[in-house]
Length: 335
Image (cartoon, rainbow, N blue to C red; front, side):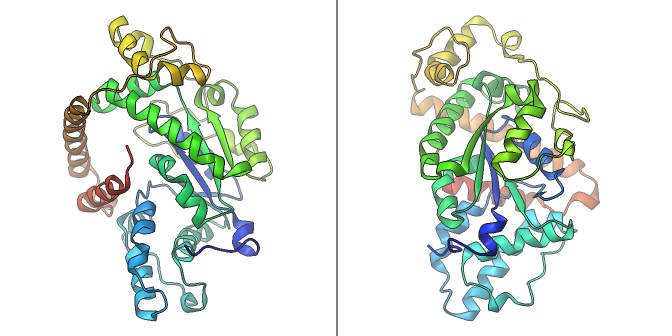
């Protein structure tokens, strides 16, 4: 696998990946980091990096035409055209002089947006990249990984409120994402850190100071105020505020027991208070497939409705493009 070497300008830039189970505060972290004067947070989940990593062997990069094809295929993805006003980011004039490889293509594409915002370092947030930390680490040996962790019962409650997802499937996925990321991150050494959502919202200054130290950035007060306020977020506060868990009131005792029966052991290992501390039973494959079918149906309906009601100026990330990226993410998903 081609990658930038152990030194040089690319090592100084050190890309940042924010990962974790969806609903764990990854968007909040990205938007807070984007408020830093030195770091640009790309505003869309790309979902496509593992797919391009898996398919990169199909491009013979020793042939200029195939290298150009890789550049064009990557920069024309809808996540980039959406952010760039409906057009693909331009091909750098000096593209043929750069190191031929997927890391260069990825880095230069994100740097285009970073430089437009007068920054030289970029951050990407696609939560499910938590399943692909080793591959991203091989691609970018100096990259930093921030793993957002939140009580799995809160994630299950959030997914049920927002999209009607089955809580048991959500916490099963949460358990596997947590365990996969923590094991895989051992390869990253000091380039990996965990941030608990509950601690971040309870003491944002202390946690964001810790994050800035990890990223070798000076702490700036601006990172305590999310630079963007996505409409799907429950809070529209101008600063990070403490989030009170709602799963106790949203779920009855029977549901809580079923959730902890699946993930109680992992919850307990992370320091969360649970009643069934040894719970680690996985739902049957048939139940998981049935729940997934229902969840996907609800999600597709929501995406279609969102596309139909979105103002025309925001339709550059087309329905087809969004579904295509989701399919590509599913193609590389381990869970």
